[in-house]
Image (cartoon, rainbow, N blue to C red; front, top):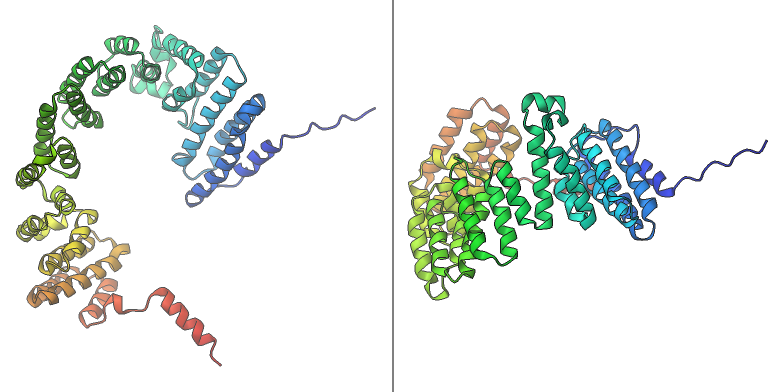
Length: 451
């Protein structure tokens, strides 16, 4: 009896298995390196799409199957691993299209995965999937979605958990997929008709306005922008769609020859929320000859804004005197309530020109860490207090430094580890005077080399 020779294994399939490291648990910290190795294999499969599309289809399916099994062996199966899976789906779609596979079958298989996705990898997959679909693929995808959207028992297509939580989940979900399709097709009529069947959102208005703008139907686009802004005003917290609608309105007004109206819109937005972004948006519409006057007008209007927004705005626009005056009148608690990312740049910028104000900000930076009991940042607090001490010395504010020392001793005397280092700082042994890690290492290395 003749023995059958074992079928030769695809070398890329072996590479997939090796990269997935079956049986090995991937800790969170190892996740990025793990995904990077998977991406290298995915790049090799992508190269096959043009020359060996059918082989690529099979490899993508194998890779996706392996990823779903590997999800059980990951500390965190979301994030960049989920993005990798999303890209594999898109590669699979492109490979099937290159292999001239049946478009309806591709759509059916894709929906099978979207509806049976225990790890949520395919959630919102349509946003990327529609970008790689050809015309025939999009049409087939739309037919599959439309059938689910219009099903009498649409809620029955959702998972039991989602159906119990929200009976209208499935219809809303498939409506979102249809929106992605119509946006990709730039089908304004279909998108508007869909909006009439569902709840209109500010994002919908932005999508329609964007499509109309691409068609140079600017008056119609402006009408949809206005409609979207009206919807946005009904929501107390707003959304990013509102921000983009406001920007699109100004762009449309300018293209329609209404530059002055665009400027007034930008001015209204800046007055409502003075910050770096709204300032840049305003100055984009200011005529060159009027910039100095509008800048002064904007800075005066910004005086009423919160300190957190003003620090970044005034640092960016080099309005240091305004910033200095505001910080001088601010309470310690007000400055301590701001994030490190906002106050640290101000302290560094003012350390030489206005050391008294910088000392106040450095004090707040250090106290904020101590009050929050963030022990892993105590070294940073010590560095802040060292900078505060130096700034106090430069500006002759010895009493302010002594008051800071007293406050720290009174409120944080139980933080034994920190207080020992703080007392060394007071005694003149600042953290910056200590040798660095590498300096200590070199010293020990040199000592060992001595006879």
